[in-house]
Amino acid sequence: MIETFARALPNGTTLSCRAAGAPGRPLMVFLHGFPEAAFIWDELLEYFAAPEHGGFRCIAPNLRGFEESSAPTEVSAYRAHLLVQDLAELAASENPAGRIEVLVAHDWGGAFGWGFGNRHGDRLGRLVIINSPHPGTFARELQNNPDQQAASAYMNFLARPDAETLLAADDYRRMWPMFLGMKAGADGFGWLTEPVKDQYRKVWDAGLTGACNLYRVTPLKPAMPGQPAPAMPDMPHDKLTVAAPTLVLWALDDKALLPGLLEGLEDYVPKLEIVRVPGATHWVVHEQPRFVAGEIEAFLRRS
Image (cartoon, rainbow, N blue to C red; front, side, top):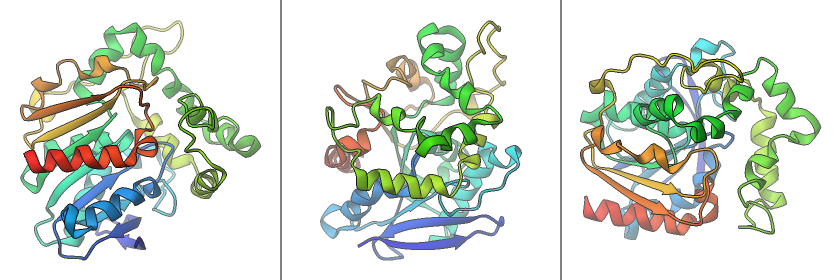
């Protein structure tokens, strides 16, 4: 059974959360991306809370700016280290050591998962990343790979000052193709049903500015048309490494994040396993939740 609650953090942020499993059990945290929300993890929350699958305390927060979580309007409030801080404080609210035994993260959630793994490695048992680029390989591909530059061009649209207004227009007319363009409809995997669309409408009705601010604040974007590639930030290697055993699940039919992002990942993550998933898209958590759960569970047994 899924419980919902609002968790006020010492830094002033409040995160709306979904959870399953008894407090005090080893903590397993799930981070969503754009344009999603914590509800996408419900099946996995219940799966891993079950005693036969680990009996974890499973929590999926809505990131700041999403659903009913705090949504500051300032772009600077969405800098990566602040969302990593939210995660660290959420973990500390669950156990005195602030330890996350397993962190599962997708898309933007993965950006903060990579960050937590680097900054708080002593508090992380294992990391699972699902179609979320590591900042080191993402910066490289944005600079050098024309295919990834083209695939990431949408980021500049989402960073526009009027992006949230355009996205909300006509019952989110510009939002649905993000899913339908990767087989979410009845002629594909079929997961984007009317009830699921209503879940998304409820999330998006709460506001899209916070979500768009993630794109406004990040320096990792491709060049604008006709302009040179933007300078990438200086990222020392030791600020990008993750020591925890890490599983990367990568759906190969993701149109936005191409498999080239996996090349060289072992330079940053020495205890790395990669599982490539043919025939699946960026929305693999919706498409194949039991497969995703099974791969995570097998990884936890191995590691």
